[in-house]
Every structure is written in structure tokens, then in C-alpha cells.
Length: 215
Image (cartoon, rainbow, N blue to C red; front, side, top):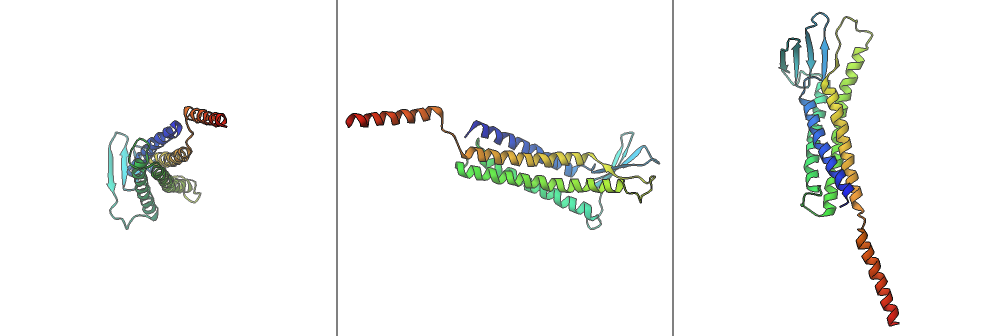
């Protein structure tokens, strides 16, 4: 396998694992949306996929999980589904990619390339599944923040840290998938070593001379 292709493969795998952990952190964090009020400046509210939290400036934080799944809004339900699908597809992609690594002696080269390509495609799909709910929740916050029908004194939701973490995880998953697919495509055409090419040329020249002597 070419050194460049092997480096791309290892880099893609490292980025893949880091991006999946970033997506997992995004799913768990409650800071998807944040809101602070002028009436109670010492407190701020945080909205997540699994719970809501009240944060105080003195350092206290109290979180409460949602009481019922059926009582959730459609936005949170879809965000949960997409993030869980993102984690599932990403984990499946990692499991498929590991046997296809060049450093793992598990199967033939052609099968390795197939596993690596499938893992890269699953990584890109996982990245898209991560970007959809994160971008939608950001769009939801922007639309409500600039809604002219809502009075200015009414508090509005703003971006939380989980959204930025989700954007980073989604883009990194896509990048990792592209790196893995590129490494597989580069490894399909393996250039012959220079010494082997010179040996073949010398051998061909020697055979041609030998034939001419017999003639």
C-alpha cells in the first residue's frame, strides 16, 4: 500500500473517532438553546434533547428530565431521532472500517478497500444526519429571535454550546469519510517500485540480447 494512502487512512480513522465522540457529546449536552431574562439576570435557562436546566451565576445548576416522550414538541422528537441515527450509523461505520485498515491483517486487499469505502460512506451519512437537527434548531432560534410579532421585552432562545459542537462533529464526520474513501481509491493503483521496474527492464534487455546471439 502507498505511504500516502496509508497516512490518509490513519488520519481519516482518527478524525472519524474524534468526530463521533463530538457528536455523542452534542447529543448529551443540555446546552442546545440558552435563554436569559432581564428580570432574573442571575439565572439562565438551557434547553437540551433530554432535559432542561436552570443555571445560576453563583455556580448552582439544576436539571430536570422531560416527563413524557409523547409530550415533547415535534422539533425535539426529530432532533432525538436524527442524533440517535447519527450515532448508530457512525458507530457502524467505525466497526466496518477497522477490519479494512491496512495495519489490521484480517482479509484480502480488495475486501479491505471495500470495507474502507463502506465505512467512509457511512461516516459521511452520519455527518449529514448530525448537521440536519443542529442546523434546524439554529434556524428555529434565529427565526424566533428576529420575529417582529414578539415584543422586545420577551426573552428569546439563543445558540448554545451544543450547536457549535454539533456543527464541528458533523463536518468532521464528512471530512473523515472523504479521507477514507480517498485512501481506498489511491490504494487501488499501486505504482511498482523503481528497483523492480529497473530489474524488469534489465531482464528484458538481457533476454533480447541472448536471442540475438542465438540468431
